[in-house]
Image (tube, rainbow, N blue to C red):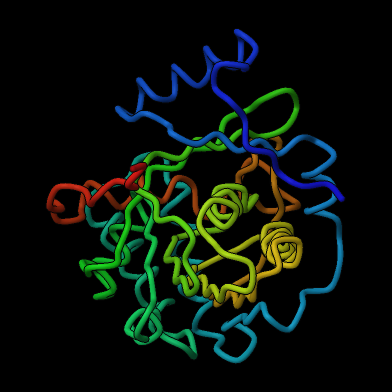
Amino acid sequence: MNTARLLDRAALPPHVRHTVDDFESKHDTCFSHLVHFDPRTLESLHAPGALPDNVRVASAGRPAVTERMAAVTAVANLPRQRDADRDRYLRALLDIYGMLPVHARERASVPGTTVIAPEREGRILAERLGVLPRAHGWTPQAKRMPAAGGLLVGVDERLPAQVDRLVIVDGVVASGVTLMAMLHLTLRPGADVEIFTCHSTEQGALALARCAGQLGVTLTLHVGHVSGALNGTFYAVEPDAPDRVLLGDVGDTISPVAAASPPRGRRRDHA
């Protein structure tokens, strides 16, 4: 079975260590966990297939979701984005969450639930949706990096350990590797996880479902719309127009018009 592997920083080849150092410097963070998805693992996780029943796609019954996605895509491809464009983009994303049959705030309120909302867009959207702040909420920094033809995910210490029930809020699922890394690092076998996102590629949705099966956890993916394909840099693009992104960088787009957040949450206790 092809699965992701947790890597030891000290054993990284020099060129991969240089990549990690660069990402840490750029994003002012320190990765305490490094999870590697090699090319064979990615190929297996992203293999074509039918979406399983635990992938719940809102646009199948709500055409208005695709209208909001069209607005998002239009803004993402503007040569220059004004604040009014960014506001329209953020409003469309929040509308999509509101059209999901199940709402993240309700599921996050179930007793015993831990919430993860990755920086930046996950945290911003979770705050706007009323999912954060909360006592059991975490906002890790998670970044994907190219490594030996595959992808390496760095995750910082703002991550819970060994939880039984998890809700994740994130803006978009492209390759799915950052969320899969968090599943590997946080869940006990038999745990229950619900992911709320506006958009996913088919490859990303399939990868999350397959990863959950490998880990022995129960996953439900609540997604506004599934479309597009992954390009060579693992962004979601139009299959017939690979230069046209579907969402672009969600964090870069919405952070200039999002209210300032309080200091980031706690770190994982290593004691």
